[in-house]
Image (cartoon, one colour):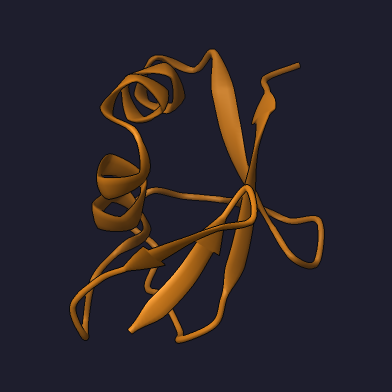
Length: 66
């Protein structure tokens, strides 16, 4: 299934979690999110947890943590 992170298409397996897509997108960014330096925001402006489920065509953006 396809999801988008910062407008980059990422292909992940059915049942993947956000952390799986984020690791595929960038291991560096994944580590920054885990450490709290950055956060993941969904297409509705909500901050997401790495353990969150994905839906096909979902979109996420990486932002600096407050």
